[in-house]
Length: 268
Image 1: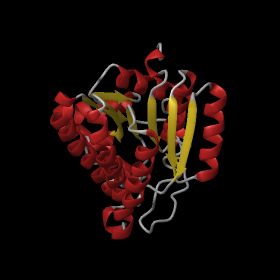
Image 2: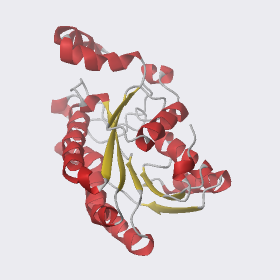
Image 3: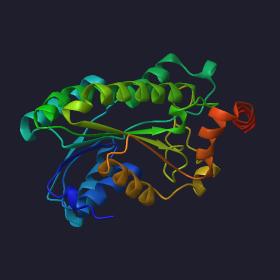
């Protein structure tokens, strides 16, 4: 796809130090966008900035910030807004997954997941949205998951955070669509990233195991290309992944089959 529409555009990407966020940044860099990258992993983020600079980005700025602190998310957004103006494209990609039963998941862990996956995204959006509207509009992309459509074993708090994103940003799209704001929800299945390795167990420690199914997932570069295509074409919802995305169909139309498949996760 021709990414000429990104040339010179101000693009903010959270969770940009690796995986899908990094691949989206690299594609935008090749199109000579102006990039503003966010992540809590400072060293990886610096490497991402260097890569984007060599790929042709007109400018690359980064902020190492823990977006699970939604106050910090708001403050860094205010800072960049004052210095550089609002993004024309805001990609809310930062997040953390979970691998624990609901009763074994401490409330502090649920709070961290909700803060990073949901409130951090909301905090940043609320700061920049008025200026985006004043500038004639813009695009907001939200990285979600199949668990934003249905619940799933060992993902209770993660699913809650993704359901919250769906409700909030679909509402925002309806409120501000007439003012030039277009929201794209990316519903992802299995993508070959480190999401499982970095997932949280019930006590807040790292899961540290790569799910075998993820090793066969979609390449993150291919996912990023499809994601950008959906954003630039103004798609409101884009589902990406492999055969597992059929679970959306099963959940809606064959719920007994959905529950049979989903419950097998408990035995793994």
